[in-house]
Amino acid sequence: MKGWILGGGAAVVAVGAGAATWAAVSFFGAGPQPSDVMPADTIAYVSVDLDPSGSQKIAALRLANKFPALKKEIGLSTSDDIRRKLVESFAKDSGCTIDYSKDVQPWLGSTIGFGLVGASDPQPVFALEIKDEDKAKTGAEKLLSCGDGDDELGFEADGDFLVFAKDKTQAHNTITAAKKGSLSDSDDFKKWTSAAGDSGILTAYAAPKAGDALATEFGSLTSDLSGLSGDGLGELGGLSSDDSQGSGPSWCPGAGGTGATTSMLKKFGGGGATLRFSDHGLELEFAGDFGASTSGAKKASVTDLPADVGAAFGMGFADGWLDKTLTSLKETCGDQFDPQSLYEAINSFTGLDAPADLETLTSDSVQLVVGPKIDVEALINSADPSALPVALRVKGDPDKIKTVVGKLAKLAPGSPVFDPKAGAGSVTIGFDPDLRDQVAAGGKLGDDASFKSVVPNADKANSVLFISLARLSSAIVKAAGGDNEVAANVEPLKAFGVSGWLEGKVSHGELILSTD
Image (tube, rainbow, N blue to C red; front, side):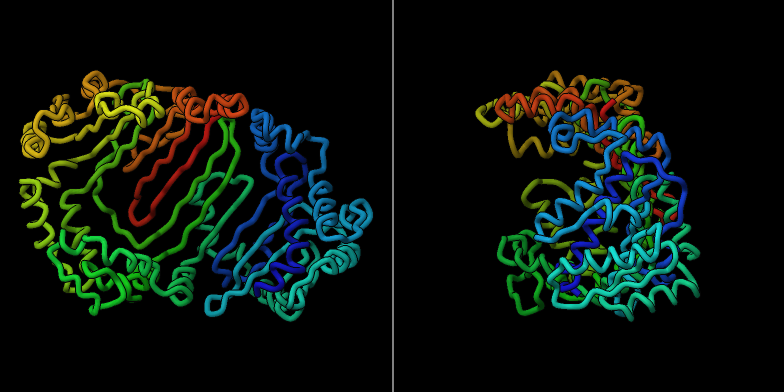
């Protein structure tokens, strides 16, 4: 499979990449989609839509031209054919003689898709839209002659598309299976691509059986934890350092097994994602069923933070979240993992009463705030912690939270970080007293235009990350040594936001970069 992807398949990818980039700067009529020629048992799929709304094409061009480096490198306009540039670049690099106007342009269509077909033995398939079947076959043969893969890459035409696979038989079988039931007609495909929001420049889909395939192909994804076996975590948990219990670390021997990870992957119920351009910038939206139930997590509660924060992260917690987490970890690690031993070790070191005090320290939600005047260079070179413009707010019962903070204060007597400031249903701590007091007093971050542009669903989000790139631009440029080119390319950036929430068993998320 690697051979044809690295060899002849590179030519197909080059043409497809040209078509994909063309999506942002050209205007075509509505057309068929690659999912029409992918079978219903396709477990993973990505397509680039060359006919998103006209406003998205304009937004893509506007976005690219805001960045001097990108504008200089690409130099796009609506009259440019980026496909020509990419195909000619591929021809030059591969030593082939390709006349784009004669060999490619007459047949290249408007969409490209990639899929993994079949749940038991997934096979990669490309589908490239074409305008003229005969010319497409001739052009494809010439492109594939540029490859040097070990395997023969095959293709077959089906009216609107050329379907490429590891050989002609696979390409033929893919088309035949799609005629009996295509991915476009799959209820799961329609459900998850719809759940990912409005259409955009790119669509991605993972079928429920993708989890089964991953479980079979990769086994345990948690085996990386095995490298932690000698890091002292076992002593913290009161566990033996004997590695004979499994390939995982001593404190979690079951992490090296396949059972827990396989079980998790098999619970996957499907998912979809959409990448789109907007008036504000670039958006990635996704939705999926990862086998979770409604957790009861509280809201991230960042909208009442000060409006001039440099960055903020918020997360809501469900009642009893710690016990639930450790119970799940015990299922993964096995009987040797003892939550009670872990609690005892924590209590002995900190003076806390875990798990109750640990849950009090998170209570309903936690918000971490970075002030707008952070100076990275000064922080690195300064030994004064009061220069750290960071504050942590915990929403919950102020009296209970202050009591637990008081216990922690005994670990560092006189430290300003453990001097709490009570607010309305919250307690805030931090090195910088001014920022601490400002965060405790609250504000109207939720009314800030840049915040709303990148976190549009803040009111229902269980987790939120917000970065005001406009307020932190000076710090970013200074950290880069005052480079003028960096400054010019940072200037268009306004804000970045990531948010997530759970509705029933469906996890939703948005990642948005704003330039307005």
